Image 1 (cartoon, helix red, strand yellow):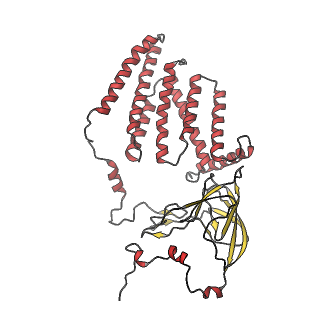
Image 2 (cartoon, one colour):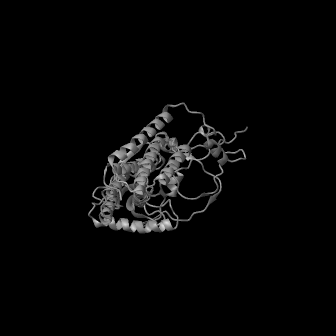
Image 3 (spheres, helix red, strand yellow):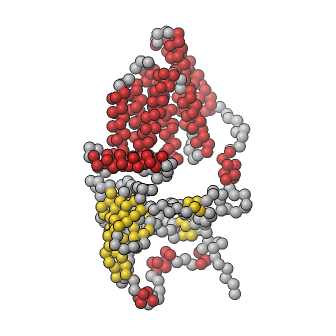
Length: 426
């Protein structure tokens, strides 16, 4: 058992640096935000191990930190309200089933946050085991080095500084643990003079090695960059650019810029609603065809709150309408979503679940006409809308299309992408 002295604190600090390198790429490669919260949990867990507190108090403090963080980022209720805790436990049970079914995509954000905290807890435990029991950190150091270098090579993540930090922290911990193993094997007392005689040469060798590696001239790479070869191998070999990514699955996707090719059917419902009539529901509209798929022509945003008038293209005043109300809720395949489905003639969004002390805030993309939530994922909501009543006689009298629709939805044939224009012959 190590003493609570400065060298031991230094070991835990370098262990914190090594574990931090596993979290740094998440900000660049994923949508994970608030990394500082996870770093705070990591520092707290290591510091509690350093203080050698009883495991019961450590567990209470770590669990409290996790629940406070989840409540702060994913729920609107106060920490001491039991409604959010019941919702989270229900969500955890449901998402555990998704993990068993290997349905990784539909796992909710709050449960992913919980899993990341558990993963950090496990890493801290393994780090403490390697430091105190095995007194050998080489395996963790080696895995961290592989993790950083692989991401620096094959992912859009710059690992130049990360490699230097990992090498310095890893070799420093390896040298210090070698000193502790030697002291324990020879059954010698740990004296400050012994520590200085060991650490000064170690620090000098590390400093000279790092400075030499940074400033010395470097030879060119022996092997060429493998990334272009891997990308080329993934391209089709028949000369076309249709892609060779295999069949796709039908369903809602954010990216529609490459359509076509084989597909697999998918009859899983996304949402359900309770209303008096059937109606057309939409999520977004893209208005530019590139020849391979659809993209939006731009992006302008308007913010509004729960209960405000939704600024979507309205139904003309000349059309008779009936007021309607629909209750929307998501199916077990999705459970929560960050965007809304709404019918034509939408007026207001009310009674958004989960309810909190403040109304939900939304953002409307005026080009795609997509409504997204700025207040976290939505479980369900009430939508007020107007149902148009068209008469066949009035439709036959239509002689022209409104200019606003003409500019957005009708394009001149010469503005279409090359290859999509029909040939005009005499």
